[in-house]
Length: 160
Length: 160
Image (cartoon, rainbow over the protein chains, first blue to last red):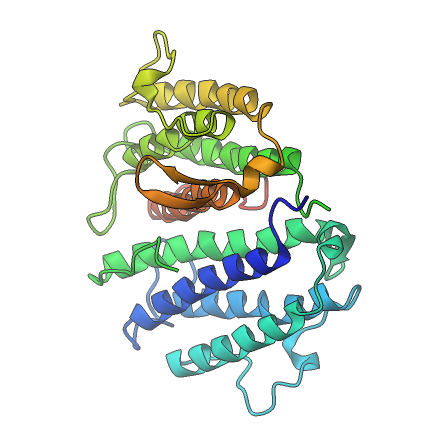
């Protein structure tokens, strides 16, 4: 039997993405791409990394062996290198839809296929999925500290 | 078919726990229970929370309906409320063994059983497992910022 269904895995991922979106929203506009601690990246730069780890790999989950970047996707007028909160959130919401769309082609069997993502990361697809999620949770935890240091009360961790 | 086996779920959890252990080790002894940013908890206090979310719930994974605390476990001479790095790491390593021990009784079917943990958190067991892991990754991300702010190079995120 399945321990976790593919529908549940998608909802788990999107739930984390909804929370990350609220963290991005919580940043003062003028701090998103300027504030940092200890020489680390701004949360705007981190958000852009998380965007790279959303829609493009979702395409690969549905299309074995095809590990593409934003430039190879039909992003139309979207700014794929956001520099403002609005552009980040716009690309975020577009990515949410793309992930849902590609996930329709993801089977339980797919989760156990081994692939090398972007020519360097080896493992089963379920492991790659959790790497994407864990990386987002990890960096979002960093965003929580930035918000607290800025005197902003962050959203609750358990609200997805 | 299983999307993720119970053995893989255990290894995923323990891999994250190994990384968290290295973060705890990386803290200067005099900062673990004293340093914080933005009014948040010290990483020592956070580590103690993570310990509460290790061995005690692992017992519950193996024993349906039995959600106990450290006080109800056979902890012997262990300090279950650590105040030093050594005590944290000692309880951490004991917990690692306990989790491995209890996990031997965890079946794939168990992952889909619904339970209310500690009288308040409802959901399937796989969801509870990921709540434990995600909570650890989230707070560990906070620990990374603390270390950077202290001028300490943290371990790589992808090394488990």
